[in-house]
Length: 355
Length: 206
Ligand SMILES: Nc1ncnc2c1ncn2[C@@H]1O[C@H](COP(=O)(O)OP(=O)(O)OP(=O)(O)O)[C@@H](O)[C@H]1O
Ligand SMILES: [Mg+2]
Image 1 (cartoon, rainbow over the protein chains, first blue to last red):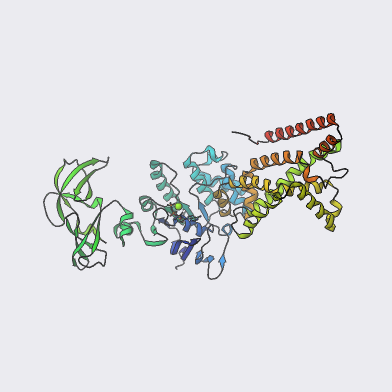
Image 2 (tube, chains in turn orange, cyan):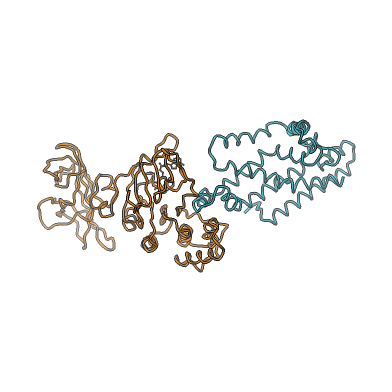
């Protein structure tokens, strides 16, 4: 742990009854960093966030904030949620319906016995910062979803917590707003020099917003790294599958040469790729290639196969070609429309991962 | 006669409010607590309903008879109120608990996160949010306390009689006209209570 670490979770375990949900999660959040907790539904993202916040009861491990232990099973430390001084933005926003926007944001300051004048000034500053100044006297039900989200962020920031936790902050917005909001949120966090832990189940949102990604799977961290590492160098099949749009094919290892291997696929194609498995020759394996890495070619060659192009679909900014290869459907992207027929498809060896 | 009307009004309005306050305190203490004690309390509050009101009234009478420091209160309205509140505890608790269940857990958790203790969250968030539920609970408890008498039979003494008891004893003595008048007054009181509750925002339907 370096002195830049602001939030540190060490080997945290949590169960509901006899059902283990977190099975020893360790992670660090550095000052000024945005880290995403990514993972499929039910992988324990929300549970981890809530355990850090003090809303769920772990039974093993420790959590510390800026060097202060807030939970430590071995030492018997468990600081209650209200004394952890964290900011949490709920997925449902959880604004208090009986308080105005102003009072919602002012409440944390009131609890901290800040003077009335200073409260007014700080709340207005926070609201202004989020473009909500004109809505101060409204009640939450008089706001749009996007405005409610901003109020709940204002409420979580107004008392300057060292770490802010966000649970799927964008999931209640519609698709178009979500893309704008994630840029806006990322910008806000960076500008205010906050340290943020963001839960999301959308991998492109995680890549766009964060400095680092933790991919959670079944209560353990499967892999962590920068968005480029997570996308470009997945260590396991799960990570490769989760992080992008892929062509996935089953087969058997045909040959091994150092870090590369040849896989003989069930659909009849043989390709070379990067070896990410210890499986020996003759054993079952999977080949994974990102859809954007597969491309049309003019003629035969290394890692190329002649396949039936079934259709080209117009997606607006590109075309998607769908090939039939035995039992598999392979997809590739390109610029122009292609008539159906026999075509050469290249799966570049440095873009194929064999797990 | 007049005294019985005043007593009934007192026990219905103030007594009802006080009872709802007590039920609320118990409800909040066990709210979203999942420990053994809270679950035990959930069952214990049901027990007063397991015996007839008359018996429960007798039990309260004995308590006031034999517990020394309570004895002076035996022939006051307090003992009657106490018996009513205990007997209707299970009923009142259900009203309070169903109101508490309506409050989204995240609203309370959000309060904890920004720095409010459990007690502060109850005061500033939970209770204001169930305000209407509390008024509704008061209305129902008021109507029950207003017409209740069997529980208080052993506790009623000169000065603490209530309308219900008066009606029964007058009926036995054949004063049907007075019974009719008292009944009308009782109905009017319930009507006024309802009007007051509606005035303060209790909704009987949407
Ligand atoms: N109160 C609870 N009691 C029992 N099990 C629970 C409880 N809350 C969550 N779980 C279980 O814990 C697991 C992890 O839940 P969690 O909410 O952390 O998932 P998540 O990663 O946030 O998923 P999502 O993306 O759907 O929000 C799930 O299998 C869920 O069924
Ligand atoms: Mg979740």
